Image (tube, rainbow, N blue to C red; front, side, top):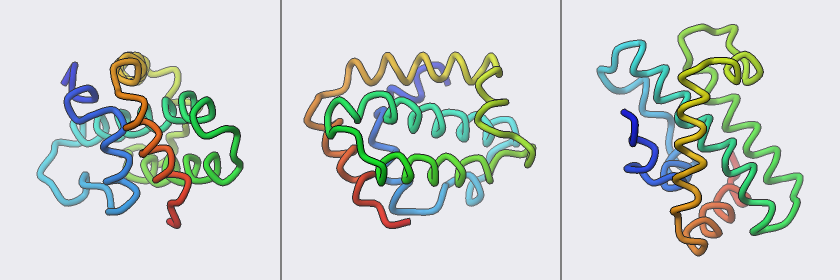
Length: 124
């Protein structure tokens, strides 16, 4: 799973996540695999929070949509008491977050802008 974020496309998942329910509940993943997917999704959302303001400017609606997505992802985590703050001290999450940041550097700016715009216009 080391390159899962890069292979899925750093931001491509975000559009799918915005438009559909998370796939974790509908697949036969182990709980560990499902938690890893949640970590990948949250890491990608956090990277968008880092990248998108430079592309689309500061925007309260964008920030709120990222927070809503993060909250939705956390709801699928096996430990229902998990928070973003707790997750940030998780070694696997730290690794996934760094992979997401690297993938963002390798993602075309036009694709980044498209996904940032999609998150901005999301009406979840």
